[in-house]
Image 1: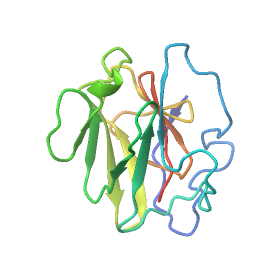
Image 2: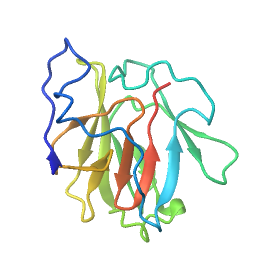
Image 3: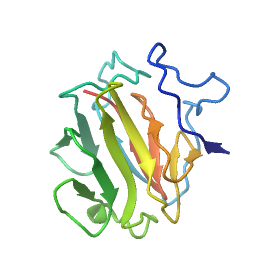
Image 4: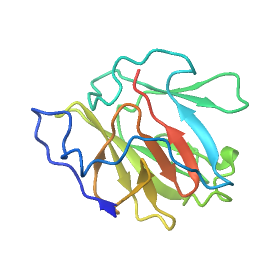
Length: 163
């Protein structure tokens, strides 16, 4: 099942009926999946769980397994997720064994939508797909990211929280 883009209805944070939204339940990961936790450390209270609100100056804090210092990202413009490039506006996932986990060079893009105060995720036509809560995104169509979503690029998994 593919996730279609959401409407731009600003009245509700749930853009799709509950039956159409990706499940937020834990799931079985592939045995060789690498977990990247994005957001609050374990035990932190997250007040915005499930929210789509991602206004100006919001941040993603990325806690990586085995890395003491978190990576803080403030996506005020489109941010490309992939491998092989560390240019401005790109996050190179090579250091997390991205090639082995099926991440494309230009896999997905996170981009803020200032008009709607949302953060959008777009699969850039990747070979191994982009998934939100284990539902595959349609290529080149934006999906509104929710606080607490699980994002998978190929077999590389991220948990996304807003700060």
